[in-house]
Image 1 (cartoon, rainbow, N blue to C red):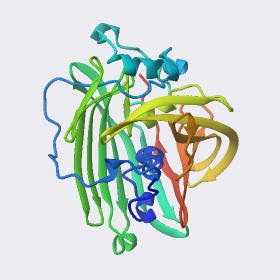
Image 2 (image 1 turned 180 degrees about the horizontal axis):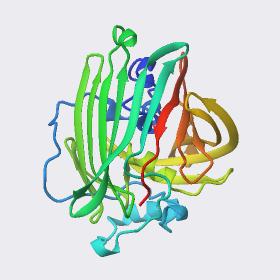
Image 3 (image 1 turned 90 degrees about the vertical axis):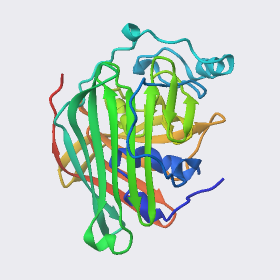
Image 4 (image 1 turned 135 degrees about the vertical axis):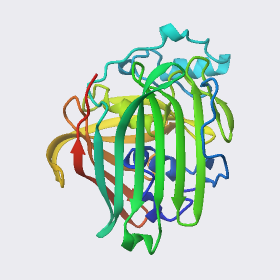
Length: 314
């Protein structure tokens, strides 16, 4: 099992705080989604797409009654039947809305590394559906750029009613590494088409940015675990989010009562702990991510909420 394919310093500046939550765990387990891509910049038009194949670990709280075991059986039997567009799930969202902007300062130990911004920019149409256009950026500061320059941008188009993605775009510049990736999700027929091929996915699969926003809308109880299927690169990853404890913390944006959660990959019935990360979400319906800590091989990466503006809840 590979641990990290690139310098752990890269983890500090990983695309965005949203990606930091998921991809840190993915990188720790060595998926091939980390290899460089030389692919098109833009998401092409056409029908959306999505797929089964991985465990459908959406919890009942996520609006899906399928258990992990049942979903695994479905993937053996074949792709789940299409979902008529008028029967796509509808989910309650009291957490985020258009206009929300979160800015984080990222540090690697005592070193100031840069900033990350997550923003619900606007509402746009995808496949005739109203979607939140969410944009996340990460940039290294002048000092850190002299050592390792990072300038990343990620976009996800999240269905307003169902809180699942239809499109995803990612443009990475990390040191000498460049990557342009895209994905089009067919949440009706359960497939995803990317510039690296086509995959089957479980119903309502999340991308690495949308999963943060989806998780924020879920009910959370200390001691329980949320299960969500996410897609990255050439694979679908069943993700478990454990709700560990309550804790009051202070960050540049202020003091907050929080729930501490830990997202982990789940494989073979066992949780994997390499590349662990902890996220502090406010203990209220908004579930603002105010702090993230990532323990890497030679240190700790922190992402602290610096400023924020709440959005308009629909």
